[in-house]
Image (tube, rainbow over all chains, first blue to last red; front, side, top):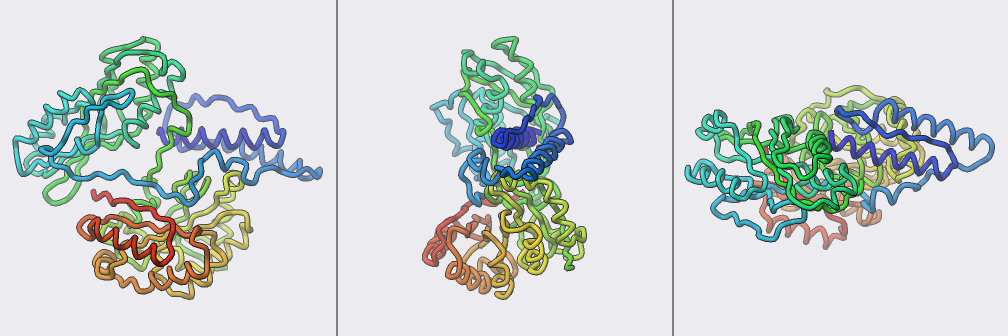
Amino acid sequence: MARGKQTCKILKEIRKQIAAENDIKLVIEECTYQGDCKGTCPKCEAEVRYLERELEKRQRVGKAAMVAGLSVGLLGAAPVAMAQTPVADTLDASETEVITEPLMGIMPMEPQLYYVELSNNPEIKKQFRFSMADLGVLGFEVKDFEFDQMKKEAKAFYAPVAKGGQEKLLAFISYNLGEKATKLKGEMKLSFNVNTNGKASMVIVKKSIDPEIDFPVVDAMNAYTWESAYYVLQSGEMKRVNSDCTLTIQFPLKPATVDDLWIEEPLEGEVMAPSPKDQ
Amino acid sequence: MTTARIFGVSRHRLTTDGEGVTTLVAFSGCPLRCVYCLNKTCWDEAKGRHYTPDLLFEEVRIDQLYFLATHGGVTFGGGEPLLQVEFIKQFRELCGPQWQLLAETSLNVPFENVQALDVVLDGYIIDIKDMNPEIYKAYTGKENDLVISNLQWLLQHGYPNRILVRVPHIPEFNTDEDVAKSMERLKAMGVTRFDEFRYIIR
């Protein structure tokens, strides 16, 4: 879970700062866990308890515990900042425009391009599918059997979008590759599925730029979270579907730090999220 | 000791509902019936786990170091947290003054609740929905008189920078023009901090 990993990194930085400021020896090993991360784990929790014990020891001998406000800057100045929800404006495919100025690292991709009304004009869906392929950006196709089935009962289709947008995805890849991401030049192509659970699978490097980065990029893609594709049915209900995607990454990428990875978004799951779930 | 039903406790929220590292505590029970509410579970006061302030404090204090280091704390949401006056007051006594306690609220609660908690809370995230009473009623099923009078009181008796007002674009209920009107009126009342966003309907 990409978000969990990001949270983990930030919390780890906070622990490092507390330890450094209070002269507490804290050796933090790099986490090698590959599965879903919720931002903390027993090992991380043990480090927090260790810090608490060490701070208590210092206080017992009359030393001040330097904690208050120590890491405020780490999270950025966002007092009472609320999660901004990406806006999924509806946009008829006939009105879409291809943006000609590419972003660094990836061809342009506007979320609006990934919405299409299906019900009014049957030609649009054909146009839409081809136009995405022509763009060579994040070409995708919904599996045929689902598409054929869904087109009769759906009025709109939303393509998969990387959580936080493509710039966050690129930042995530860049962060995982390190300095190398900023030095390579050329084009890398990937194909993958975005599943209804918001995870990518079957990530295949179709065109490599450097074999050394193939695995780290695939690893990053596997870790990233997506807003999976979905249809809006005539009844107004939403039906999520798997989708096949291709992605072209233009190197070099911008250098990325932990701060670049953070995505403000509402929490998913059983707990109320502030936006837009708490409506 | 008082108890409350809580249907979710979420740790390690980073600047999403308050400064620093926060834990979101979601109370059951809500006076509104928002059309697009995705947490309808919270409408039922009888759902969720019983907590006492002690029990909650014991559960969330695990992140005290993070709270202190980042000026974070606990954000009470729901549901409607301002219906839990005694619970939050007792919680403040347990956690002390250093944790930031925020409420994410509709303010559609009795004035006495707002007044009683004003000395306890550090800030508010206010879901205003829409300032137009007709739009508000159509969307939430309730009048917004209390919301406006409570907000006015908070602005007059607190500090505007303690208040963040969330102004949503609500598909099929308000227009961009309505939202602009709401914000204009809120600014005239003294609101300085806004979170304008759009609901995604799924």
